Image (cartoon, rainbow, N blue to C red):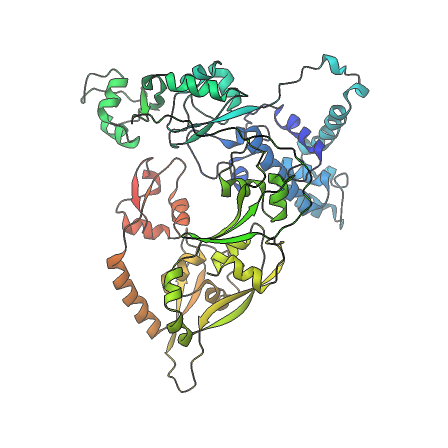
Length: 562
């Protein structure tokens, strides 16, 4: 709560939500301490990278960070903690409708109480009562000496480099399988995620060295992981082996089957061996030396560095700085800072003098741009536009969007530090085609109409016609709001004959050079999600893959996307 700038007592809400049970599942399929529905969880980076082996809504720390951000967003919308809590229970739409029914300009929770569902009507009073008792239990007749508190959630982290049987990990840790699963509630099976080669497993606190030694001593056969598959109608052993990308011989051996032609019945269960390649020993992750946490009070300008993958902004850690204070300094979330630097979620300590990446800007074709500067000067000119910062944007994302650099934006806007606020207006310098002289012949323009298909976005449509997203917005002001377009809407696209000729000639030359791009289907993938990931349309995928349908996607299947 403190790391996300939230009131400390808000954590007691999880007692009402789940009774502090990370494995709680409601009738509506809400999961975990904070009872996240899958879609809401994904909005706050839970299960963003879907896996068949984990559900991050069950992880106490990840889900708590997500809940704090969700509650903060609700408070920012309604400006009242009671209304925010009620919205957490019944949704923002429910609260908006209740406010409308009250016919009051700024009603309180108590003003709209009679319009709320029964469950929500008692939800906020339940929270208030729970928080009051937990903050002063003795005042309400509880003897603190008789309260049995759960042990602190402390652990070490060990890097597992291949899907592994949890029983082998528990054995190396000297604990039971149940105790290991209590430390790692996000794991859904008795193996580390079968679709993730590397997984950071939580092991008992202060046991790293002993565990590493024990784990290396366990035979590979004992570490091998299995998941279970229920046979469907008309499924063959070959189908199942291909689906999970395992050898047919291994599949037959681990299930004691008679041979390749063994009959398997619909509904029977088969063990699927995962990670049958030679096992790689894991010995990298170390516990960092602890440093005292003090309040950060110094703001230093960041270092801007260039690399072969683009431009990064780094920050050198100073005495007293923490992950939270640095992320606040640069206007990014602690989770984003961790992701940029591959810092595990459980590690809070950072070293004085450590270099952390705080922003990254991927720059494409730098060398080409530099080499062609002279030729571009005659056909292009610099134009300064304005960009209003939206929620979730960083300087790196904005720079990438406009094909410029973080350093250019900082310099142009005279920013003293690389932190930006929602609603802030930034000047962005772009290269655009130079205006033609009146004597030059203007190419004939024609207007096409493009019907938006499911899975398309502004970037994919602009790329299709060889135009920019800003041009699309300019031509379709009434149909495009921000970055949102609706499937079925009709967009105007202005094209000149020369543009079409250039586009077709480019396509002819580039198609011969393009290397096909393939995607391996994972658990939870849909054609819409895959199309969105690669900035293509669903029809593009269908055209490249004869017979591909939403209902026929299989885990492990390779489909061409470009």
